[in-house]
Amino acid sequence: MSGVQYKTVSTDEADIRLDRWFKRHFPALSHGQLEKMLRKGQVRLDGSRVKANHRLEAGQKLRIPPVPESATINPRPGRTMDPDKNLVRQLRDSILYKDDEVLAINKPAGIAVQGGTGVSVHIDGALDELRFEAKERPRLVHRLDKDTAGVLLLGRTAKAAADLTKAFRHRETEKLYWAVVIGCPDVRDGQIEAAVSKSGSPNDERMHIDADNGKAAITDFKVIASAAGKVSWLDLRPRTGRTHQLRVHCAGIDTPILGDGKYGGRTAFLADLPGAKTLHLFARGIKLPRPVGRPLVVHAPLPPKISDTFKYFGFELSEAEDLQA
Image (cartoon, rainbow, N blue to C red; front, side, top):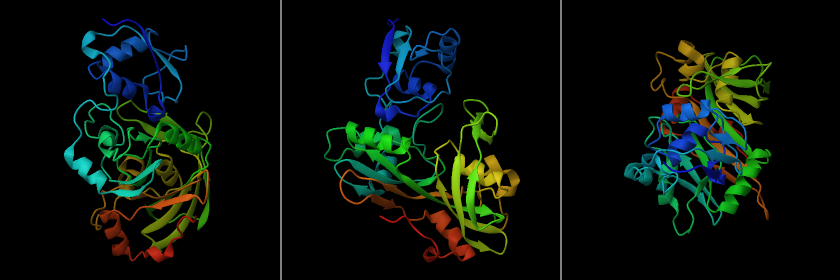
């Protein structure tokens, strides 16, 4: 058994769940063993008890009790196995922007950003292969849902990652999403302000609108186009960054995102539409302030399946308004 350890949450580990942090650093430690430590209060975060699904913040300090030698700390945090070669090739082909500080990739749908229970292939596990000429491993600074494609920013140095994380935390970035939803909102543009909170098990995390106990969540929306009263194409600009915020907010105004059975149930599907099971939520672009000069604006092209849906309903990209530098 190893002795008590104290670890500081690094910048690239910000906003990951505690159980996933342990899976990254102690890959042989079972979820049951972790839960037992948590119940006994042996694991502490900044001196306080903590739950497995708690999301960490950079700079927080973890007390780790003695663990079996077989579960000792992974010498290469973020990687428990060699990265998937196909994923590495896909990510290298998806670079949207690169400079000395920032790397932007067009994240594919269906690939998790970080690992977890039952998730062996993920972007975090492939980041060593995206160093290019840099000495440091790129760091994640925000997340996208597994089934959401689009712009994902990475910090190429520890300082850059810290600056990017701060920009996201203080809402200095502007994020643009496109979604195809079932039906059409009652108004052509507006703001959804509905607090959300978590429910469900750690392996089936679900968000719901909770006016009493939820965290504030705000989304600006605009209808770009509609088709035959069946679907609408929405411009979504989240002002907060809650888990599944856009999916919950769209379902909350009775226009669930096409293909989102988790929050829209059966109403989120169209039987006569090819590719209807694809989640039609897309991270179109990010606008990021820079210390010197104009802001950085990065846009991603539509994924093939969503592009096919646009063609099916006659949506034209010229109808939309992208982010401006």
